[in-house]
Image (cartoon, rainbow, N blue to C red):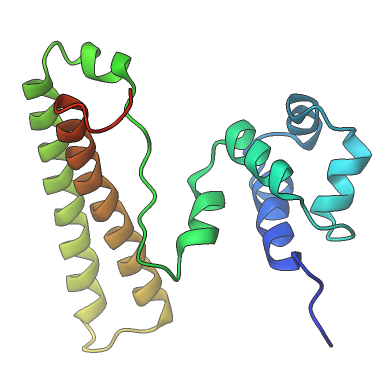
Length: 159
């Protein structure tokens, strides 16, 4: 059987909205400016999402798994934007960098723990590999947040 175009992405959105209940389908449809039945047809895999609808989903749902769907098999890492308010809330950039560096250490410790736990039985099964990959993602995002703060300081990234 041939998979329908966009079915895998629709399954992810179904998981987020219907099973995980990150947000209600009704609220997401309203915030996207879309009729409920139109969004539900997309979520139900009857009709593929358009590029504009995907962009709206990213904005409205705000779950990193949507972006990761597009970057998982690529060299890119999804990182949340720091806003000028985030930097100002730290009083100074230095405090923000220290906080992000601490976060990176905590994430690396979680990664180390996941690897040690996985290797306790001298093999890494698919569940172990999944957990380790998730921890690697967290570490990559933590490091990228430090890079973004530095780029903001140097004016390399628009605020």
